[in-house]
Length: 357
Figure 1 (cartoon, rainbow, N blue to C red):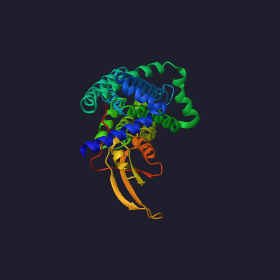
Figure 2: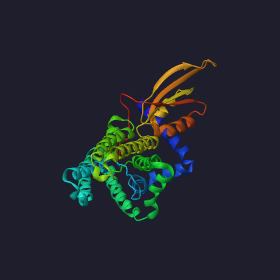
Figure 3: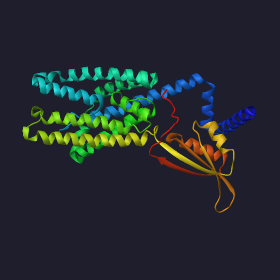
Figure 4: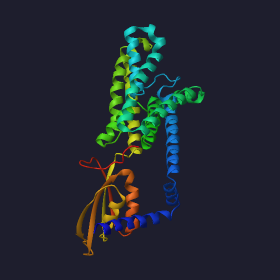
């Protein structure tokens, strides 16, 4: 009996593999499986390219929209960078303007010091590949940001947007850039470091979208920074304008963070789940699904209301990024099946999520 079931599963896998080989993508995938070392080389090459792309997009957002040299007001970047900004500002408030020339040094010291335990967390709790690519991403952001500061067009872009569209437009552009950067990083299992690592770790444990945790952490940082700005008249032209400038900085920084959160959760669908309901005549469809998808299923025997014929109703919950694969698989096995896909808010119980490499 067990031998027969095993034979059926293997036979089903072979049939599906043969179907895949008829497509160009399938042939390329099969070629990589036959040359496993090349598969790893391609995976790491793609990951490094996307790491560099993520860093470049973030650097553009940082230089042109978050902290442009030519703009009247800079936004708080959030995360470890925002914490370091807040600490350097607090040091200036406590020690006076004499420390102003050393604020960048204070910022750098705390930025590195706070990132060290976070990187250790990434190594121990998430994965070596994730931690290494995150460190590369952080280094590339610093390199690209320093380089982009030398490009006049990128430096003046923030002031141009402020002049023609207002600071709200600049906040939206900042959110799109930083959100796109983080989403690309999360999609390829790395991060921009700092608070993104903590948000990614918590989202893995709770199996919920990443963006809201990033938003919660960064909002708290921005509120503290805004309070410090308000009691620091030396940073602003006049004392009467302090609260107005602080409120504006906090408001537009929150707009930027909210936009960033929406972009992250729209693109990064790793922790989003969908329910797939299949109505089929084939009594073996569920066995073929279980042989090719790492999730369980529930089968209900039903009857078609119009035809009166027997039907099998299969309910299955999968990760959002697996939806296309599962639907294509069902269509290959039973082209006449009826498939209903529904987004889920949350799932409780045992649910398999592919571990981070």
